[in-house]
Image 1 (spheres, helix red, strand yellow):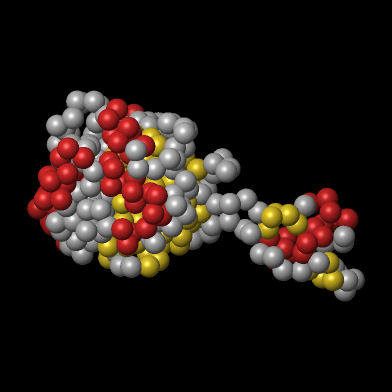
Image 2: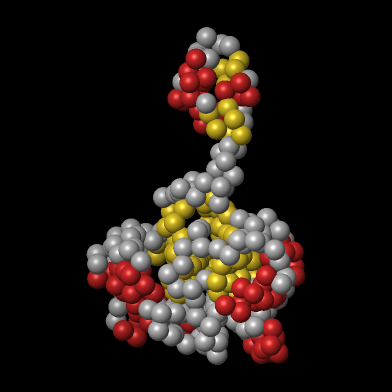
Length: 309
């Protein structure tokens, strides 16, 4: 898997209450030229600076739900962008009520945004796409309206062999058609079969972000065959009753969903503050699925940090 076009950071991974070194939920993900922020708990703009993204211009914000540990950092971050003179348009996607919440903060504080903001209400299916990514949304099962997101990199199915294509009499203008699997025709009218000048393209990056949610086996279809599954694991199995009562999952349940989905790697996150150590989360998940697993602590780069089986 080629991750050269991907930059992914866990900015925060704690549930409910911020803790030193473990900020509430937030992740940054760059795919090609598109930079996304997934959830925005308290302190996110500080974490953005700490991980070296200061001055980065996010294109899209994806919010799972309106519980404070996923959204309290957003009004401040968007306000700071105004103070920094941002003019680039922003797309904000999330549950119904998100736009009213943010505009209400602006009204109460006499604030505004110096840049255009397009709000989109999450719904099942594609909620955002461009030349880099396709973002899909799916309803989760939590105490309030909550959405999961799947992000798939857009890649061409074929790779052009430059020397062979030029030798066959083709030009750069023909390459995009070749990448899409079509035959090409030279300026002299000769048909060049696609298979003669291309090879199979690389597979694209894919990840699913499922937080917060109870264990829902049907979500396996939404996350089918993703390269990375980020699944909340607020509790360990010994506190499964609390997980079920509060609309959360255990580490074992997150691993079960990964197994059902055929995910290649599992990233655990959204940990309750009742646990001083997180080692048990990976151990519990490994009992359910034999794939590489990472405990998504703040500052983690999920592309590289895994417990390999």
